[in-house]
Image 1: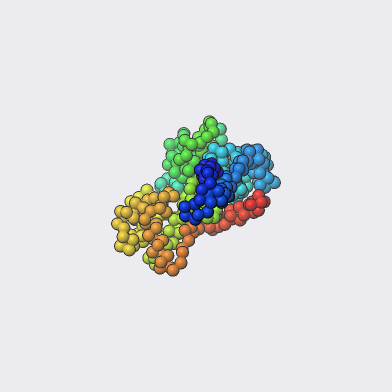
Image 2 (image 1 turned 90 degrees about the horizontal axis):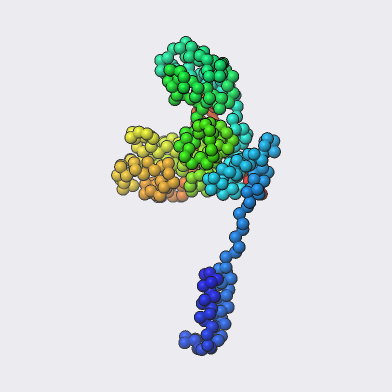
Length: 388
C-alpha cells in the first residue's frame, strides 16, 4: 500500500465519533486504532530512497582496480569496457565486470591482437590441406604464394613472418583481391574465425554490424582486432542475451560453444535418460542449415507418442533451440516432466557441453568444459577482489 493511498483512507476514517455497528466500540477509539494500523502499514509501504547509480568515473575506477596490475594502459581498457556496457545497456555490476575480465584474461591476457605461437606454420599447413581437397598441386600453391603482394613482399614472405591473427587476416584479404585462386585457397579456409582481446567470433560480429556504435574506417573484421571493437562484440556475445542460468559458469561455456549450448545440453541429457540413447551433449538440437534428422531429433521423435506431439511440432520446437523461448515450448516442458518423473528427482537445466575444442591454433586436447571452468576460476577470484 502506498503512502498516498494510506493517507486518503485515514482521512475518511477520522470523522465524527460514532460507535462501530459490529463491535459497539466508540467511533473515536476505532478511528484511533485504524489510524495507527494504517500509519504502520503506510510506513512499511513507503519506498526507500533509491541508491543512485555509480558515476561513470566510479565504474571505470573499479574496472581499473580489478584488471590485473601488470596490464599496460588499464585506464584505456576500462574506458572501452565501460563504453561497451553503456552502448549495450548492460549494468556494470561486479558480476558482469568480472565475467568480462575473466574471459579477456583467459583469451588474450588483455591484448587486442594476441600472438599465436607457430601461426605461420599452422596457416601454411591449412592452405596446403585446403588445396589438396580441391586437387590443386602443392607446386601451384607455392607459385601463388611467391607472387608479390601490395606491400612489396611475396605472400610467402609475409606468411613466414606472421605472428598475429590480424596480420594473417590482412594477408587473406589481399590475396582474395588479386589472385585468381585466392578465393579457392583462402576464401573458406581462413583460419581466423575469432579475433580481438576476447577472441569473439567474427561471424557473430558481422551479424551485428548494424548495431556497432562507433565510427569505423575499415571492415567489421578490422574492428574486431581493435580494443574497442573486440571488447564491444565480445561483451555482446557474453552478456547481451537473456538466459535462465543460475551460475555464470554456463555463460562462459556458451561463449565458447554458442548461445544456449549449456541449456540445450541439459535438454539432451534429459532426452538421453528417457530414451536410453547415448547422445552427444553438444547443444546442437538439429542439424543447422539442413532438413536432415540428426541424432537428438531422432531420439526426441521416438518419444512422440509419450509427448503427445507430432514430428512436425517437435521439429518446430527444436528449431527454437537457439532462442530463450525454447524453454517455454511444450516440448521442453514435457520432456523434462517425463524425465524427472522417471528419475524421481529434479534434473539440471544447464549442463556443460561435452565439446572438444578444434582449431588450427589449438595443439592440446581441450574442451568447452575446461574453458568454462578456467574462466570461472578467474571470475571467482575477481569477485573476491571486488568485495562481492
